[in-house]
Every structure is written in structure tokens, then in C-alpha cells.
Amino acid sequence: MMLDTMPTAFLFFAAAIAMFALPKGPIRGAFLLVVPLFAGWQIWNLPAGNLLQVGFFGFELELMRVDKLARVFGLIFTLAAFLGNLYAWHIRDSVQQMATLVYAGSAIGAVFAGDLITLFIYWEGTAMASVFLIWARGTEGAFHTGMRYLIVQIGSGVILLVGTALFYRETGSIEFGLMTLTSAGTWLIFLSFGIKAAFPLLHNWLQDSYPAATITGTVVLATFTTKLAIYALARGYAGTEILIYIGAIMTVFPIFFAEIENDLRRVLAYSLNNQLGFMVVGIGVGSEMAINGAVAHAVAHILYKSLLFMSVGAVMFRTGTSKASELGGLYRTMPRTAIFCLVGAASISAFPLFSGFVTKSLVLDQVAENQYPFIWAVLVFASAGVLSHSGIKIPFFTFFAHDSGLRPKEAPLHMQLAMGFTAALSIYIGVYPAPLYALLPYPVEYVPYTVNHVIASLQLLMFALLAFAVLMRMGIHPPEIRAINLDTDWVYRKFTPSILVMASRGVSVLWTTCAAGINSVLSGTIRQLYRSHGPEGRMARVWPTGSMVLWIAILLAVTLVVNFLS
Image: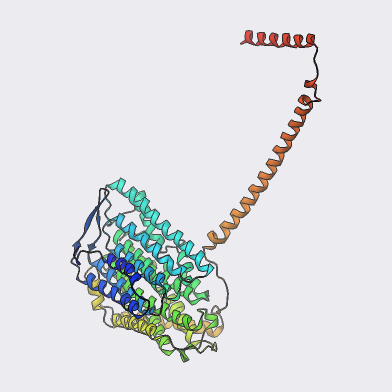
């Protein structure tokens, strides 16, 4: 198999197997950095087209369909894998390292899948590999969280498989291309993508699992699963209008949960959900520039969201906590981590000269241009909310709020390098977006830095900053306290099990009552039979022969009468 036709995913799988032969330490760490760099080089040089087809039980599977949409996601996934492995240089856990390789390889394999069966195989591969990043934390809570995560992710794959079977029956094709919501098969495939994309009411697995993973595992998890779903939606459902409204809801509801959340990794998980909404809206609009905006924002989001998770993770690595109520004043001893966090905050808030500004604006402009004024207003409100809960809350309560008295050391050098590279890329894209625009699926004719656009963005951001300052000054802003905030997962994690327990108790009581009644009736019947047929019963007496003959005659007479009448 030639290098230019070999599936990139196989490189990661082969590397995972090769880990058995490598000693723990710098050699293995260097190997984990080389693999994604080599994979990125391969993807960069791949020619366009369907490069590898194989037969599979009568189906023709396309393992390497290369176009601009697949290439840009493949490149950012390899870059994210490199940065994640650099951040996790200190890890000596073979399970986490192999899981990361298989996870990244499966996500990249899915990106280049040209058919739904290949997509399903890699889709499930991401689920089974990623759960080990949660279980690696080694706590009982992480185990149960991982099981819930695995059930949801495997369930998504099962739905995808059923949808694929129905789609094949309806169309005779398994090609993974543009679809419409006109059949049961396409609706099931859409639902499968929606689960991984964390659609409203299907989103709780994200906030449940990401904060439960290891410090380095969370950084990796934040990259692949949800962005793979964004790719799948862009590939299969571009221009599906319902996505506009789903995405708009996604941008708004996480804001309120993030504002009251104390665990900063959960805040970032809600923020991740919010940012996915902008991408989903762009895909729903469906124009070439809107798809460009969704893809560009996915690329920028992988970088700045990883940067924010890295910075909070570095703090957790040094202090043992990510609770806002237990942090504060860490800029004194972790100044570089604080700066990197501020870069991530500025990027996610779409400040000019940072990556979010040149990507999110593509989506907003297309929403306005395609005559969705209400959706545009929702997205503007959501943008202000992002600044509040991620742009301000994360760095402020971690590094600049009340003095927690903690004086941890600065993050390890390899973590600083990973954060530094990611921060530099976020600034580079914001200052000079042309290279990113050139990678997008369609030609880009857009100038983000116009006077009107910059002033409008700064006005929104300054207003949000002022609102935060006023709320803090007046004591209205939700305080950072230790608490458990309920989300809709309470319905299936607490409410439904409690209802089932109550129902089972009711059934148990009913069963016990019915069984007691039946036993009472049976006991009474047995006693009556015993009195009649027992050793002392009437039927045990000695009957005279004449009486027996008389009874036989009566029975024969009754039989004759019945037979005559019938």
C-alpha cells in the first residue's frame, strides 16, 4: 500500500501497537509527537479524490475520500493530537497514550470515510478509545461517568448503523454525502450526529464526562468527538434549516448554567456546547460562506478551547482543584499560564486580532445576509454571554479574584510549550487569517477587519465587560460557591431511577398482596377438600351397596337426559 493511499488512521493504529515495544520515558514521548506530525504531512500532500476502495461483503467501501472539507479537519486533528501529546509529555500511563492514538486515528479515519459503513466503524472507534481517558482517572465516580459516556456514544453508533441500513434499503447506496430529512434512515443518521454534537437535551454527556476525565484526557476529549460531529453535519446536512434553530438554542442555554457553575472545567464544557451552536447555525444556513464559517470556527475553537482547558488543567495539576471558590490570585506564581489563559479567553470572546474574531464573524454575517434577523440577535446575545462566562469568569476567578492563599509553582515546561504554541496559533490566525481561509472548502471573499465590524464588535465586548463589572460591584453576579447545579440529566440520572424504584416497590407490594390472597384461597380450598376427602372426611366413609347403586342410577339418568337434550 503506497503512502499516498494508505489511510492516515492506520498510522495512528500502527503507532498504538508499536507502543508495546517502546520504553516509557522521553523516547515514547518523542514518538507520540512524531506520529501526528508525520500524519499531518501525509494529509497535506494527499491528492484529491477517492484514493482507496475495498470490497466488504458486497459493498464498496471508500477508506480515503480526500477533498478540502476532509483535509482541513484532518489537518487540525493531527495538530491537536500533537499539542495534546506535548501537553501530556509527563504521562507514563500506557493506557492513556494508546487511547489517545486510537482516538485521534479513529476521528481522522471518520473524516476521510466516503461511505456510511466506514464512518460507523470509526465512529464507534472514537467511543471505545476515548472512554479510557475518563476511566484513567481511577476514581469510582470516573468509572460510573465513563459507563454513562460509553452508553451514550455506543448508542449513537447503533442509531447510525440502523439509519445506514434503512438508508441503504431506501436508496440502494451507502455513500456518505448530502442528505435530506425525508426518510426514517436520514432522520436516524441525523439523530446520531446530533448526539455527538451535543444537541439540546442530548448534551449532558458532555458536561458529565469531560470534567471527570484526567487533566490531559480532558484536553484531548475537547478536540475530537464534537468536532467530528460538526464535520459529519457539514458533510451530510448542510442547508438543513432545522439546524439553524437547534444551533441558536445551543448558543444560549449553556450560558446560564456556565454562569452559576463553580467547577471551571464544567464551565468550559458548557462553553464548548455554546460554541458548537455557532457552527451548527452556519451549517444550517448552508451557503458556501456559511459552511466556510462553520469549518473555520471549528478550527479556531479546537485551538482556543484546548488552550483554556490546558490552562485550567495546569492550575489543577499544581493545586489539585479546578473549583473557582478555591482559586484566585494565582497570577503571582503562574504568570505565563495566566497570560495563555487570557489569550484563550480573548479568542473565544472574538476580540479583534484573535482567532475567534475572524471565524465567528463569517457565521454572523451569513446569518444576517440570509435574512434571519432573530437568529442573528440570538447569536449576538450569546456572543456577549461567552465573554462573561469564558472570557472573564475563567481567567478572573482563577488568577485575579480574591487571594486564595495558594502559591503553586508555574506549570511544567512541556505544558507551557503546548499552551504557548496554541496561543501563538490563536493570535496568528486572528492577525493573518488568509492561510486558514485558503484551507476552507470554498473560496473565501471576506474581509473581517473593516471599521464597522471592528467597532461593532468592540462595542459589544465593552458592553459585556461593563455589565460584568456592574454585576460584580452590586453583588448581583452569581457567587462562586460549592454547590451542585442540576441540568436536564437529573431527569434520567435521579428522577427516572427514583420513579422506577417507587414503581418497583409498588409492584412488589401488589404482588405480595395478591400472592397472600391467592395463598389464602388455596389454603381454604385445601382445608375443605381435606375435610371431605381426608381420612376422617365424608368421602372416606364406608357406603352401603344400595346407596352406591342408587347414585350410579341417578348419574346415568342425568347423562341420558343431557344426551337427549343435546
